[in-house]
Length: 315
View (cartoon, rainbow, N blue to C red):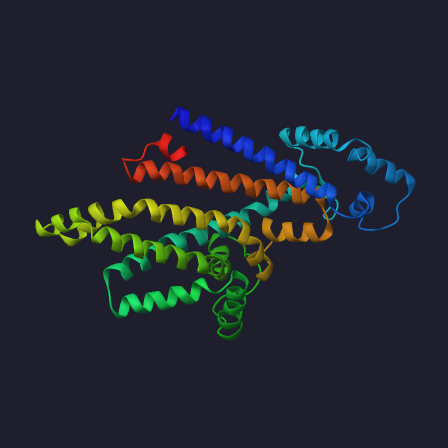
């Protein structure tokens, strides 16, 4: 456990360091005058220009500017948003709950419905399997933004079952508002998880130890739970973990489509406005989320399959 935590901690720090350099250099290489970008192209007085130059260390070499930004970030100072005129830390604190709720909601849909469809398809050959394959093929081919438009058009505009825009207030209202966005975010990932689950369960069902358990007269539920799903858990967990990690990036598209006030839509707006501090901070948060989700998947390996140790999972 200690070695695993040390390895993962070192990996997280190395990943964050490399990502921070890439993000900062990309912002530095962006075309245009930094002052004009910070002011939105408006004419400013020499005093304001001097103040911005000193605030962002624009007269310093790139390594020095990066070091100032990195040390400030370690102390919780992620910069100041020119577009919204507030601290980036405050901005993230306000927008993060919507994004977290959306990603968690979509993750539950992927894990429950995706794995459920895969198991049902594997155990019920014939009409059920064919229908599941058809549905998952269609879902896998639909991008998130297309799914968002379809869901808004059908269930929000025509049927009026769900709200089309906003994130709602209170737990139940927010859950209702996030249902369509979560479904749009989960569609393609759900199909992938269902396909991999189906293949894994079918492969394990043909194993010799499973046939032996059936011949001994063990109940079907026991065979499924102890001998099939337990051995098929590793590829299913891998697929589920990777798809959930990808939601951190896809959430930007869905939040824009449903006008949600989350980190994803904030990142898109900041990129369009060239709000450097916001882009850098949210991009780093997404890298952190991706690495942490993969770390959780490694823990699940050892919990689901005793043959896998944490050291092996980390390697």
